[in-house]
Image 1 (cartoon, rainbow, N blue to C red):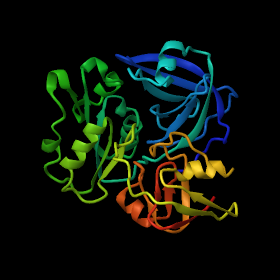
Image 2 (spheres, rainbow, N blue to C red):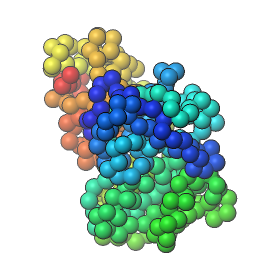
Image 3 (cartoon, rainbow, N blue to C red):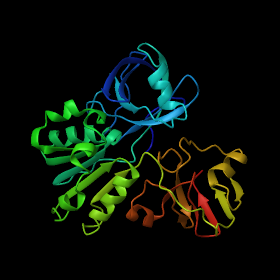
Length: 319
């Protein structure tokens, strides 16, 4: 999950912008240095640093193995905090930007076959997964949903895949019939899904009878959680820094470390991007991220300190 990009990022320029659907534009980013960009695998995302200083995460959705440019897809959000609005209103070919934080918290694992599920802009991390599955010669199918046919990006690319792709425009076809598609367990198959929270929650319910570890999700927004009323202060020992920091109830570990002058890379600060991944030396984390699987949580060897806390009064972290 570690980044292959320098800490301060890589300078890129906008190579091409292209309309992919109503309200969705794809952006190709090429390195200004002329050198090849770092390698990446399906499921990877980057931090795009805009001239305004705004930093947002976007999944890479270009050809697998392509290093002369990165491609991302950006939907114009009605409630944009400035990221997607800037991309759509002001970004133009030739403009200089910075790319940082190449990470992969949604890595595609080898399986006997795949079922991919995407909702709207959630198709972006799935596109390279499909290409990877094809290059491996493995069977796959895609269930792709959106509000309308014209709002579903990269549909033209996907129509070339024939019957393997099932499109569900909810205004005409209704929602993806998840219970129907996942009623019967497919031995050896793994499910990869990205999209709105409602879709992912419904998919979890529809696949509850599938073997543990079959379902892999990526969220663009954290799940809504009720505030934890029983948070207690925790003592965090920073093994490499030699400091001990007291984290108050209601304060994140990341914020407490920042206040003590201990720098840990971070980006989303909501438990979805993976930038603040920290190794746990001792103690039991209280995992509150939207990244780790149940088996990964049970290992208690790493945590995301922007949102997660501790089940024990003391944590020793490798920072």
